[in-house]
Length: 272
View (spheres, helix red, strand yellow):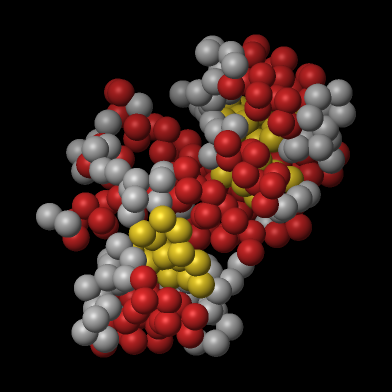
């Protein structure tokens, strides 16, 4: 069955581009250019996914999310935000209202939206009762809790850092953040986290160099490391594996929920 996707976007050019891209991918796509119309279409169409702008005429994105959250018939429909703003307070508010991902208009290409759409719909298919797959990470980690776990992330992108911070905080983690390699290595020895989420492209040294230093240090070598990067070539994945990274995740190819599930899976593996 073809998936239904609703785009709620008042930017005429962006709305038309997204609809065309979605149609080319064989999705049933629908467009609403103001918030009130969009909320009405969510209730009428019950789409498989909503792409939602925040600043809209008649009813803004937050009002739509709040209305959706309070309506049991549509509350579970996943939403990806597409906004002009990447301010932490706005990201946090959207995440608290249950959005699955958050994209800033100035920082993405339409093709990246399609990647997020595919990932979210695939995730929903895999987790549906009729499509539960053996080896599904979510089912394996359903009983794993991150509450009280000390999680450190090394990331110099403020936007991504804010999203990860909020997502980890919602899991009850003890949060540690470093924006560069030297800061990460110094913090690591003092704090000894349960897991490190490590970017590769950093200002002072790259993630592979940091990972090697961590694994060469007898005090820190047992700390599990998840590489999270924009780099996705096989040579990069192989380099991470050779340096004993627990996982290699490509930023554009994972949702926030999947990052959390991978963290749970790695912690579960290392505590057995």
